[in-house]
Amino acid sequence: MIKQQKIAIILLPLLAMIILFGGTTIFGSPAGEFYEGSAEGYGGEIRVRVEVLEEEIVGIEILEMNETVGLGDNAAEATIEKILESQSTEVDVVSGATMSSNAVMRAVENALGITSEEEEVEKVFAPITITLEDGEYEGVATGYYDDIKVLVEVTDGTIANIELVEINDTEGFGDTAALNTIKEILSTQSVEIDAITGATASSQGTIEAVKAALGMIAAPVTITLEDGEYEGVGTGFDGDIKVMVEVADGSIANIQLIEINDTEGLGDTAALNTIEEILSTQSVEIDAITGATISSQGTIDAVKDAVGL
Image (cartoon, rainbow, N blue to C red; front, side, top):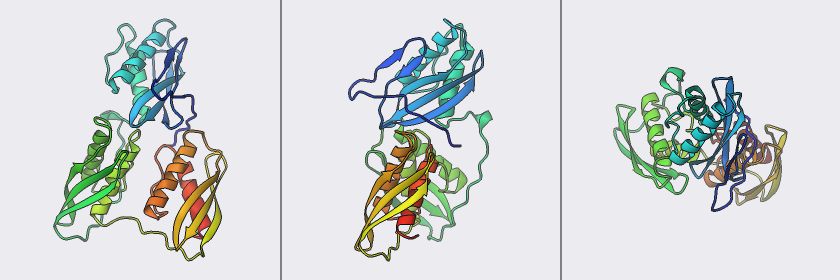
């Protein structure tokens, strides 16, 4: 599901300033990732915007709320403080305003793509076709801070086990996302799964590490163009995305983002992250970034257009 997100947050380098005054306003960083979610409160729907920066929840803003003034709204603000402090959506509810407090927790979970067991919808993913002999295979990919290494055990053409050998991403957040990603790969026997919202780099890095272990890395771009610069256009969320691709010695040497009108701090960040992945993999057969799929896919399409693919 694509959520529309807009920036309402400016983060000072050493201090996240939280102002709770008649409503919840969070100041954060343009480098953050933003997600919107909602849940039903006592007086109607509660809608929140969540900012994730360096794999931590650093900001939560209430976009819409109709709870009882002086009770439900205060409970919502207090619940937000607890979530930010504990980095968890499982916090104690505020006495006297249980529904409002619970709704804020559920809205944040909804924004981050976390669902309860009764809310989960079964997804069907394409299973992996493994041609490797039985044995153990190591794979490496880039996480949020550094390499993620996994050891994949293959038995009878299936993934029997995945061991997380090395990860340096945020403890309790990035590593948890990696382990949850491994569980999903094992249960679905597929690497075509969604990266975990809020810890995309750690989750996607784990997926890519498993792919590397199984020899499933995306094929590099085959470029027949002469050295030079080529412009390409793709469709973004709010208009065209234009890029300038520099080709040198048959490879993509650089990609410049010339024009994008998508949400500042979300769409443009996704486009830049997509460019980084294209440059590092030398491939356009990559997954669009969860939470800003249209901006990411538009960037991929613009690069394809530039190099004639």
